[in-house]
Image 1: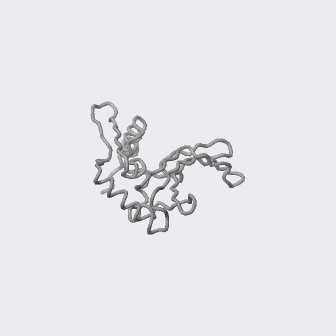
Image 2: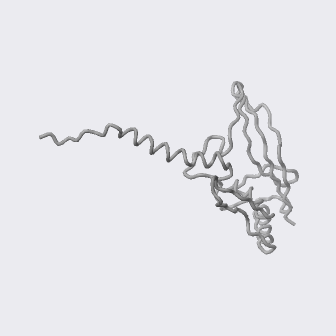
Image 3: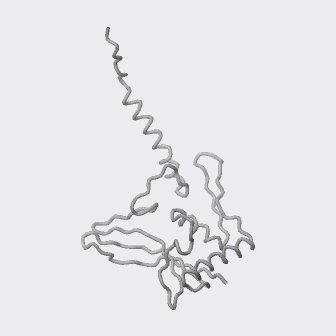
Length: 177
């Protein structure tokens, strides 16, 4: 007697359809509402943003922090944010470092469901956040009165293996007094 059962004729087709549905649904939701972050997510070398490709140039954006120490100097986010993991940096930026109100709405495609995202900010929380940020800056040897956030667009030349240009496209100064 032969105990080996033949495989179903459409076994691979079924698996392909299941994998397609598992991947297509999050892709569709993300395409229709770019503000939603779908899990599991794949983070590419340029982070969550897209990499613009034009001939030998690659263009991407990144955020940088600056603090005052005789002059404005680059600041590592871990100095300012201490024990907060670096993967939360973009969310903290979106929330204005807890210093200004923030609210955003996301609508689920083809439904009436909404997600409301924001910070629950009051004067007491704002004062505590400013004090914590001032302490972190002061302990690192920087002026505790301000820090600056810049969004920089970088154009990288792939053939020359160097930055062709970097342009500040957004700058915001946070006053901690």
